Structure formats: C-alpha cells, structure tokens
Image 1 (spheres, rainbow, N blue to C red):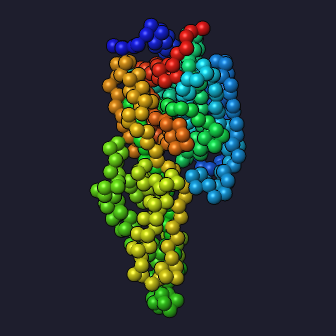
Image 2: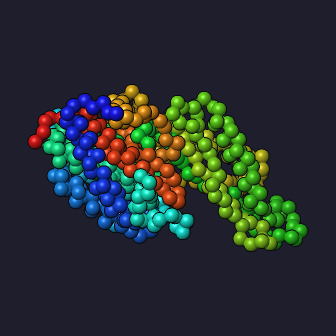
Image 3: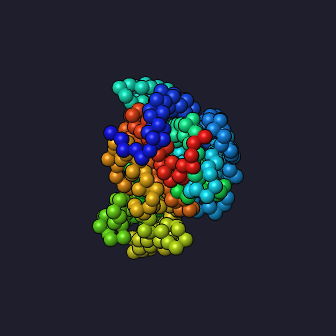
Length: 438
Ligand SMILES: [Zn+2]
C-alpha cells in the first residue's frame, strides 16, 4: 500500500520498481570490483575502477563530476592516521544541479567493503552478486554497494522522468569508511556539503540519527627481561619484572570502567547504548622461558555525542581513561620510573541529528508512504554520516535491510533495495522541492 502525494511521485516509484533488474545488475557491477578495506598504505585495488563506473553514470545524467585523490594525511591530524595516503583510491563528488534557491541534498556511500574471509565458507563467490530466493548475496551487497546502487537508481529515474529538483544534489562516494572514515573526512575537507544528507548504509529503512564515536587506545606496561625458572634478586636490585603481570591492574581497572559506564548518567542516551571500553588485542613476551619485558593491550573505546568537548573532540574521555589507568598503578613504585605508555590512535567522532529534524521526518515519511513502519534508531558503531553532520551537513543513515554484514553470506533483500531507491527519490523530491518536469 502506498500513500504518495502526487501523480509524479507515483510515476517515479513505478518506474523504479520497473528497473529492479537494472538495479540488481548495478549492485553486481560494484560487487565485482575488489575494494576490500586494508591496512593504511597497502596498495590500491579496484577503487578507481569503481569510482569511474559511478562517475560515468552520474556524468551521463549531466552531473559535474569531481574525482580526486586527496593529499596524504598531515602530521598531527587527530581524526586520521598521519601519513596515510590515498594513491589509487580517489573520492568522487558529482553535483547534479537543481533550480536556484532550493535546498541541497547530499547522497553518500562508502565503496570499501570488509574482506571475504573465510572465503571457502561462502555459499557462492562473494565477488559475484548472486540472487537466491529474493535476496542478493555477495560482499558489500548491503554494506554498502547495494545502497550506493539505490542512490544512483533514484537519480537516474528522476532524470528519466524529467523531474527538475528545486535544489542541487551532491552524490559523494568515498573510500576507507571501514578503517575510521578517512574518505569521508577527505570529502568534507574538499568542501563537500549540502543542507542535509542521506548515507545509504543498511538500516532496514529505519533512520539512524545518532552513532557512538570510537577512540582506539594502546596501553603498554614495561618490564625487565630475565630467565624464567631461575631465582633472581628483587627488581630494585636489578631483578627481572614481568610486563604481563604489570598489566593486570590495568585490565582490572578497564573492567571496572566498563561496569561504571553502564549505569553512569553521562553514558545514557535515548538511541544508543552506553560507551564501552573493551580489551581486543593483547601482545607480550618473546619466549616461553623468558620474563616478558613489554606487554601491550589494545582497547576499543566507544563514547557518546554528549562526551564531545567544546572543540568537538573526545579529549574528556581520553583524560578519564588516562587518569584512571595511571591511578590504578599508582601504588606500584615500578611505574614511577617506567610509566605506563598510553597512546590514543585516532578520534572517530560521534554525532547525532535531532529526531525532529526535517530530514529525519522526511526519511520516515518516505519509508512509511511505501508501506514500511520505520523508526528513528541509533547506530551502536560508527558511520560516515557523523563526519558530514559534524561539518555542517546534518546526515542520517537510511538504506536497505541487511543480513550478515561483515560476515559470510552477506545478503540484502531485493525488495528492500527497490524500496530504498524509491524512498531516496521521494526524499530528494520532498527535500529539494520539484520545479516541474522537462
Ligand atoms: Zn558501512
């Protein structure tokens, strides 16, 4: 059942439904490009090829396309790893001009996808989008090459139906979302912005209006090496010190902090779970009969939009963690001369768009008019929408359904792809306004 507002909206939605097979084919073309996320500065794969496919499609609509390779990340960048390069991994911004004076809309997606391992466990080749029982399977079909194909389809159908929007649409696809959002950051530094934005991350046509931030940290305890199994003098007289054991009070304090954050008022949010601090990697020791001289734990820290300071950083969270971990070892004189090494790797900043913002309400309305029952939700992890929101473009995630994101047999329902494309077309018409048909 649909409740569309005009004959033109009916026509656009019907046309998108007719284009189901072409939409699926475009997802397949994007999935076939290997754009696996990698560690920083590993060589590029098919990122340029994929962005060029999109640039051509957008160019054919008369969009002014800008495909650029950002400068390497400058030293001292708080949000991105300094020295990170983008060689072979361009970003794309395509401007579809609308009438003067109307509101502009950003349509965003990330082209990187996580790796396909364990590849042997997939039912079908993860780089060949394969339809079975109304669903499409393949790496990135929901996160988020499917969503990108929906954005392209929406714009193509608006063009085919001669819809003249009252404001510009900025289509922007970026790299490196899965690694902390470097492409999205590069896009805002390049000047990509609009009056509001839709990021087509999979959301089952719900509106994800808030997300947590991330603050990965490594904490290293130093020790002093020596032969295990032998008697040694006290450490004050030069004896060995076990760095793995020195990290124990740190791990216990991390556990206490997690418990504390679960109930502390500043960690409560209507759409998001409390912040969290989780040990995810531990490394120490070199040999089975050698006292380890160093042990490092990596902590995955998440925090809420309310924790941002006046400059929009997570420094207050950093300070709390630093103070508590140092206090946890303060009684141990070893640390006076060998202090804990606490290193903050990257501040991936959270953001939220108020639930009563018009872009949130328009997205809800569009999905509702197509027969869905959408909700405003939060995203427990992070998305590029946060970066655009933070730099002046209130952006929500709104995309198709998803199953097994980042896992074996990732899939998306084809119906939800079609409805997502239709909803995006409706949002564009309602946000930018329609100045007539050509
Ligand atoms: Zn994603």
